[in-house]
Length: 578
Ligand code: ASP
Image (cartoon, rainbow, N blue to C red):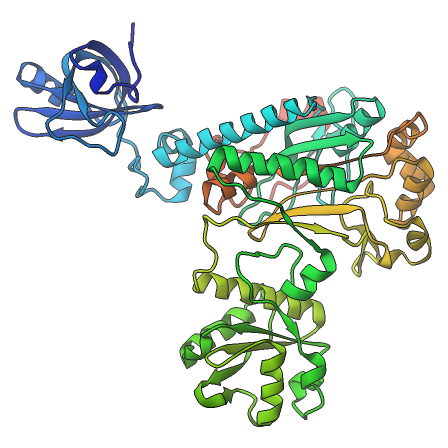
């Protein structure tokens, strides 16, 4: 009725065939007595020629994004385009039918579009027609398929878990859904299926996975979404080593299948090492530029900034001695941004002839500077950047500086992938605002030593791990607590009273009394993994219908009000509409 082939399918082997195609009018070129149209569908683009017989009519009736069906003869093109599979042929159109008209799209549907993000989001169905987004959506499908194939082959079962649940603390705020039949009560949308996958282990299902939506009502940052997708996994009778090996296999396989790249064996680093050497628990290992602790070397020389600092760290930029005053000022402004939090930036240029030029000449002798240079492995031609202050902040600012320098120097190549497991995380984090411990991963993570947890909780290490690729956290998980008493202890350290623990997690604590096997798992950020594989930064480009920076869907205009009738039914009174 509409088509015999797709717009991506025909080539020289179909020459002289009578075919029918259907699709959208993408580009229209009027050459006087001849009209060319690029007809587009999901599969590709085929050139149509309307010659003298139907030229006039076609010219006046076909416009951008009209949906048409055409019949005609596959003909060899004189002007070939070898960049596309259909580029050697064109269809000489004999007849056509307009299936639907279209308004003129508010932006061009080319890869390099003139439409701003807001406009494109409002007309997302048009945006999704662009080749660049189509590729992303197909990539996403292919990644999902590889995940399912690989894990199925390894004996995993994909099992769905509910979306209307009870709050599970994963460190964010819950989205809640009022329950009409239980006035005053609410469901929570899962921040992850964490407790359910653990219950599946108690139920004996042994190897579980799910490609699943998770919901977190967090303050939104550039590449966060209030709803996002995880590859969520759990296994029984496993150690940390088993989990790392299994999922290293999964990620390696995805990279081989999707990118044709073998990532080889993944690096591993402890949390402590990562913080000391890179100032972050998700270091980008595509380039070196480690942080050196020079606190003990530079203190006590009368330079107040250093003398007063808890921590002084340095990084060396190879061949950076050519940095100009202006460049250094710009970097100084960069580290002083509130979100970076640095107070200033000190430099030492290691110039030719073993000369030093630095912003601290007044306080440090040639020998002092030489000692710093040796400590940070610098040589002639390099520049050393130094920052001082509170340890945590300074390491964090140095980490941001390192990434910025990496960007500027082109050291963060999108086609190089360096995976890294971060292991030995602390179990707990002290929160000064709440004056209590928070779980660094989540409350179900097992400690390496129950004794340390009991006696010196802040020192307790977790059986937890993260997978980082190119400075992006791709996944994380842990070996869980599977014993009721241990779980109760953990909850009490996190500030839950016995009653609260029972009320919120009674179901899990009970389940642990019915033969819970040792178990552990991991979850990967699926949107982010796709973005890494696709080579762009924004996860939004890999989600068909994402929310904007303010958590809104501006196409369907939500969040939105609901009717008074609905509110009445739900027993809800809105106090403040602002
Ligand atoms: N539920 C955890 C998360 O969403 C992952 C895990 O521990 O398996 O981060």
